[in-house]
Length: 238
Image 1 (cartoon, rainbow, N blue to C red):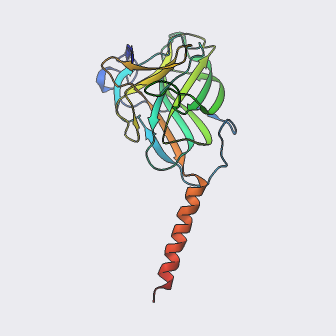
Image 2 (cartoon, one colour; image 1 turned 180 degrees about the vertical axis):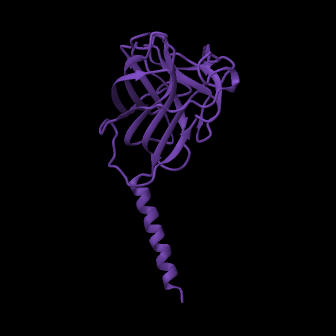
Image 3 (cartoon, rainbow, N blue to C red; image 1 turned 90 degrees about the horizontal axis):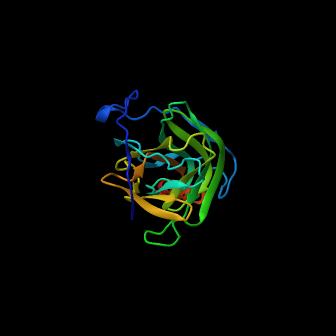
């Protein structure tokens, strides 16, 4: 497992002094598109949080190395029960360019972990969405509306930044144990030679991501039929 050194985020920035800084306030760069690889017909079911690592902060972040070089970085996650059609993705990030906001062409992908190695690397692309040019500003949340993408219980999300206006100036916050779902103690980075697992020295290797989902239509149908059957049995009782 390759090792990385995180940056200490105890910076003199509003809300980020020492261990006392609180969870970042979401100032979303919201991107909503209606298509992409792996899209299923939308369901009217209520979406629920199936992964959440935004409730246990620490004082670290990691700048994407040479942000804008087109090399994806992401995290392998295991979802909690509640649905496997992803409807929304969020990532808390920090941008530290003193000259102002950083812009980068950004691509979001979901991968099956069916590649080589142990742990198995991200391989098959389950979903891809070109977010276009995204502006990263200060400490905020990137929010992406995902069009009901089917995923397995465990998979890897990754972001690829291209043509960034400033290298090494934006990156995800590193948080501790997820409150919903789980994540292994490593993240994935493709440095141009393929994905490899990395760990932060002496620190959790989980990024501050959150995922929402709804059940697949077949699951909803079975639940509805089960409810109707229960109702019918009750009505037949003398």
